[in-house]
Length: 171
Image (cartoon, rainbow, N blue to C red):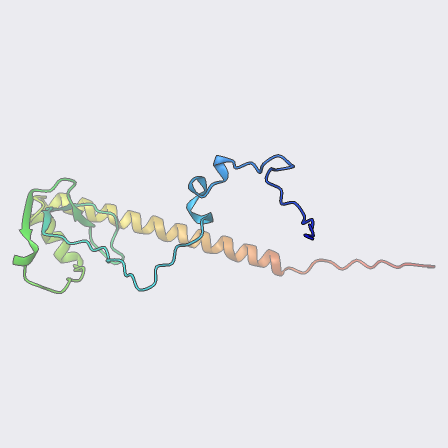
């Protein structure tokens, strides 16, 4: 006699609504930072490199002005706004030299440079020197005023406030 055993039925249909898959929740639509990283062990990426072939040098003549007034004496010198010459060279053809330092001129050299290279007269250079002296004096006065203001503020902070006594209770 054969015995029939009943086994629990495996559902072949969903009893509840199927889970929704929204397109915006799929990995393709998620930002890169929220995706799981893909690890590739043993695979090396090639390094990106930049190479330059040519160097362009712009040559500017000297003139009066510039962005700074010298601390000691004399007029400021600087570069003109437009270049007078442009040079292009291959890097392979250039000699490997160390980078030069910024050259500082004393006031006599600056005055001579303005006369020779800048084409200014002695009188014009003298006026430039007087302008530079006026600017230096103005800056010194401003610094002195600022230092006085700082001292005044420190005096105010350090000044003792009058003590007031409060008595609580019977007098």
